[in-house]
Length: 112
Image (cartoon, rainbow, N blue to C red; front, side, top):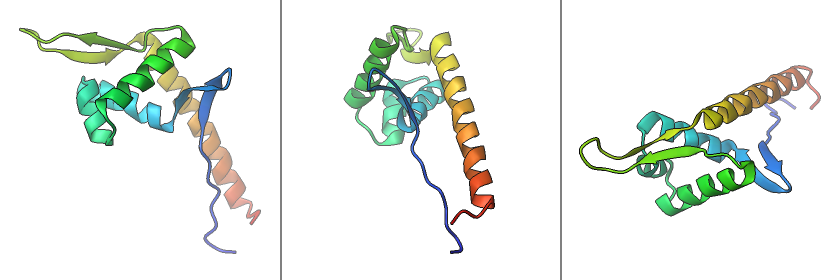
């Protein structure tokens, strides 16, 4: 069979609840890039409420603050990732890279 590919979805759980997966990874990266939960949610096509739910769930499951928010006014509002969130993203990226390397290796060995 030519053109076959191995596909996978990856996430990290704690007690059966998702801490981070590919979607939450994208959300946090967009928050980091835009400095805004609202802009990040719009870019990803999810509601602001859903983005907040993801963040709150991640914070509850890790026991750590994930996103710091700032109210508007003279300095303008915004959001930024905490050092813990940046470490979580880095660790998840490393895990994803390892999975991708294994996927490539297995595809090259032509199991299928």
